[in-house]
Length: 330
Image 1: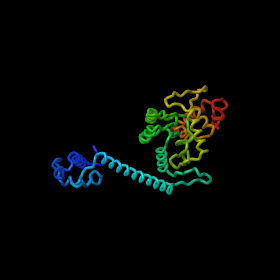
Image 2: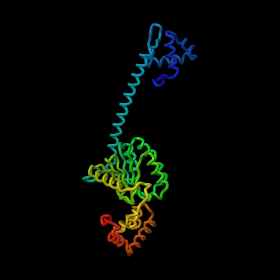
Image 3: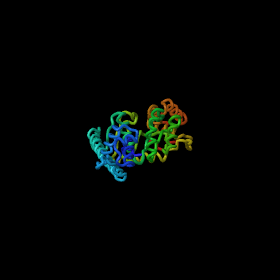
Image 4: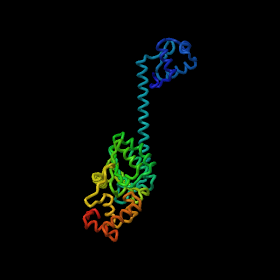
């Protein structure tokens, strides 16, 4: 009954016995409880330390429950206050250590840029940011299909954020529709309160936390090599606007992809724009999250439909025929 106040079973029994039978000595208490006298004396020492017994003319006397419980509660409150002080001291020491050893090397004229030099630093930073998030996480995930292992490892943290009421929005490539385990993860995310949409292509991998911090790779073609953490207000405003506009034009994961008036799918339209820019099959494949063979087949189909002799000509003809707005080809 009193374990939460710091009393073990024997000490509690001795205290209650002294309240029920005032003036009973060690031998009497030991006999009534069926305990050894040495054990009872040990319990009396603990009761004395807790201010639950006091010396009297007849020996030790148990204090009243009212005074005794007040003393125990005051003792716990003092311990909690001391623990809080230790926590605050530890927090201050941790902040000082982080500030001292953080690998922050701002570029000239860019005080709001932190450089992360390898995948381990990137992962550690993302864990720190997502555990501190208060309101929202916005993500561009342009890597195509994800491995089942990486998706399963992401679930515990994602579930924790969603339980805390954090808004999670993720934009995947349309190609993930061909990945059953990625679709299953997206459906799990949606079922737990997250939101997922898809687009034909994405410019870069990006994670934005609370519209205050963004993590993007230094090189779009190799997101694992190095990244930067951006916190400048102007930069974040632009990146958030990019995400919001992409989100508005993106399709729900389960939506049927409609072809436009020219009979083009959203992915085919993207391929035409990439051809106009002179991108290689490998570059197109990475942007779409598909294999180079699939990118090559789609490009060849577009060239054949347009009667183009070169990739660039296919893009130019698409603009001339109105299949591709000139602005989209830029």
